[in-house]
Image 1 (cartoon, rainbow, N blue to C red):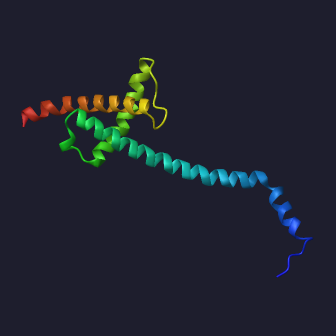
Image 2 (cartoon, one colour):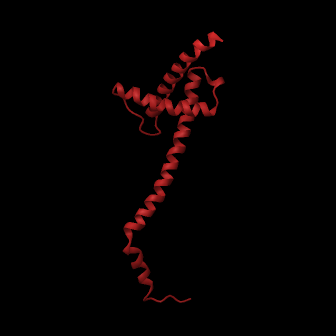
Image 3 (cartoon, rainbow, N blue to C red):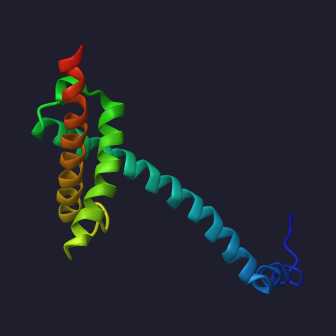
Length: 124
């Protein structure tokens, strides 16, 4: 198969005629991958934070991985909200300050849950 030198440049011109559309398609594909990666990172971050908070609050024996993930993610949201009320740093990514803020929020969340659960144990 021989390449016609007159038509080969036309293919390059065809791709260069639509650079915006190609960039848009690539951005859409990469944006979807980034979105799924963020969800996976939040789940991993939530699991680690929830596990650490359950060890601090000594509730590790009663909690499974699903509970750790939920407590970690909700704790990160609660911790970010509480810390920003006092003018501290918010959760900015997967770093040490965000980890500490998330653990603080998860510990507060477990303390609240323990407060609601304790009166119920005495009645049963």
